[in-house]
Image 1 (tube, rainbow, N blue to C red):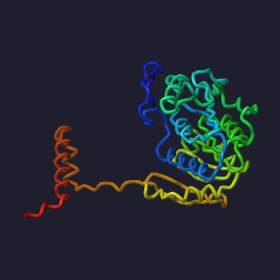
Image 2: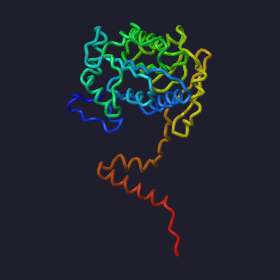
Image 3: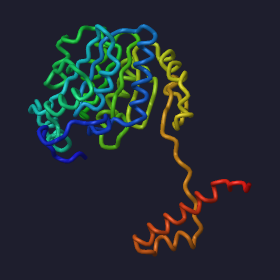
Image 4: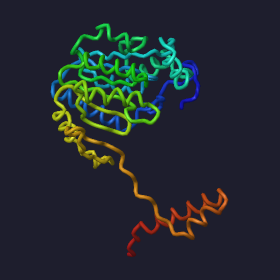
Length: 289
């Protein structure tokens, strides 16, 4: 969890990873690939984000805006929540770090202009201020409460164009059962078609899911260190992307015992020596002249 800082004391980020948040490399790659593919195919439309925290994902979304397109972000930031449950969730997770000024500072470190900002509960977007069918991509990462997430999914559905894509965060975390309930309810009762599952996000569409999956398969994910699998949900195919698990390093029992019993300074020295020996063994000898 990020430590408490004010916008005045937090330095401007030098790189995108300096922005606090939970938007990890696999989903950054998936967002970038899907958005770039839309642009390459001539698909146009606005981008919408419900729940932005300090801007880590918004900065990436802004990278993919084409001329005439608009990014809208909606977040409470440092405003008060409109109900007790939402207020309790914010106090537990975000209140000490989440400010609009911090978001703006982070975004402007990488883009010359701010997106359109709606500082309010995401439920206000149900009033039609986002034109129906105007968006090609919607990212939902706001409240974890079932009622709020169900409402955010309805907003996303109304905002998306026919083959637009929605990414829904925290659909499987043990501490966010409300998100899971809302996501799978949309799949089984509201026509949301799964496209891709990652450890953190569910990607879907109310349009052509097969075409979206094919776009993803055009990239060699395995060569980049990911695993790619296909599964089915109620007869519908869905892709799964995950990080490749590295094979464990097997050490002999005496070596493990020595490393565990040595004091930390000696352990570090021993590790350095072993690493040097491995490197020497891996270097071919210089032929004599």
